[in-house]
Image (tube, rainbow, N blue to C red; front, side, top):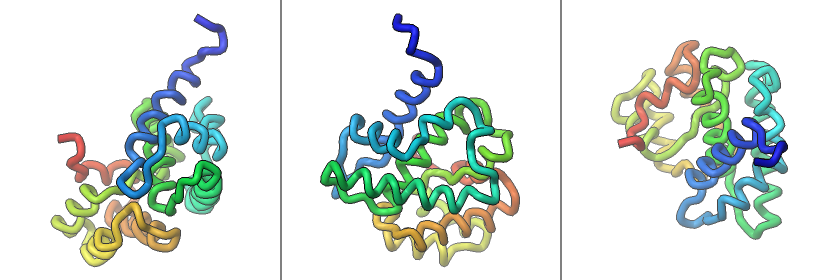
Length: 180
């Protein structure tokens, strides 16, 4: 086994695969190899050393917007047209696999990471009127997660924060039914 194959490379490969598969949708198809290149251009792989490399909770939204911007630009070099919704799904699944499911779920920086957004989650949130945010969930569902622009995406994240009232953002996925 080559010496350079570390647990960080192992996590990176798995998280990039998971993110690439989750974010590639009808109308925006791309390979896992392209997803990995996009993730690396954003610099997310450099965060895998530990959650202390993640942005402070108050800075997550601004940093996430920058990550999305870079991902959209890099995707264009592959002739793939990313929206903020697609870029967010790629980023969020990657960070979820690496940090939330990697045993760092109690870290305050990890708790502030955005969860992956998709139609199944938005449907469940609207049906249950989670946090009294039914209108926000329905609006986002009507727009479709893969078509969200930056402002619309941030509105969903803001509604999640309201609904969770201080809980870690990953907790919203209790309502996601994609695992079934």
